[in-house]
Image 1 (cartoon, one colour):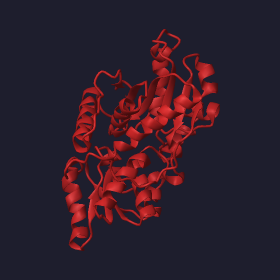
Image 2: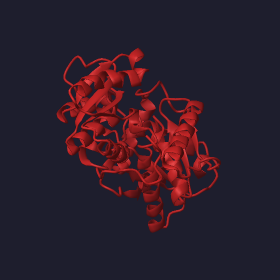
Image 3: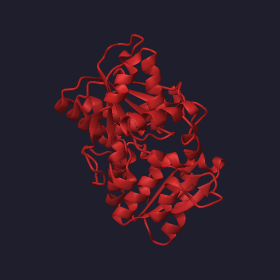
Length: 340
């Protein structure tokens, strides 16, 4: 498709703006900078999470192209897939998910249960095949095309130049939040998985004058791999929409020393942090993304980053982006209910 010089099509799915409020109980306990939390877990009831912002643009493009089926992919407990199933149901579209792995032996729970309730079709894909998603989408989409329907493919996490718009615009929303509340935030911290949220925030920070470094906490990949993905996303966004995406030298970075035992896995220290935040602030994090990233934030503050007790750079308050994922706690229920 030829690049566009205008903003992309969009359908309103999320309840925006999301709240921004301080974690004063926790901030007082750790003695570091004041931490604020941007509640993107509240973008919409059962579909809450960061992907819904991206899907406003992905679904907008799908409708603009006349699609009546959306195809996407993710892990078995993918938050993105659950939010895509919600968005498709809201818009009257068919949804088909390609999920990595094999079906559960018992009744589905967490996001899988919601995928089913929302009417999504599911194809299970083994690891080798999942590495070639274009081929997976071609195979899953063929029966729809043969039946005269029009599929639209959304990548994992809606992390392409279309979905990146969700957090380009979120950066503008956050800049307005900070200005309205009189906050000088030095850093915005968020989990990084497929990199679309991080790339969008960095593009949007330059576009809307959000004067804060965007710090990503990797939950799966190495920093060099993520840096390459972020640069590629920004370049594709720039070329498609013919708008500037100035992210070089913006002070942002991705930290990859907090992945732990692997993607989707969390050690007891992360479960402890999830319990701690819930009991001090009444906010529930998840073990895959936000719990791991928030635990990393606390570790970095303790080590002196972000103006922590060990020294740090004293660059103002910290905003943590809560990207949702509450249904991911259920597969970890045994660890989370252990004494602690």
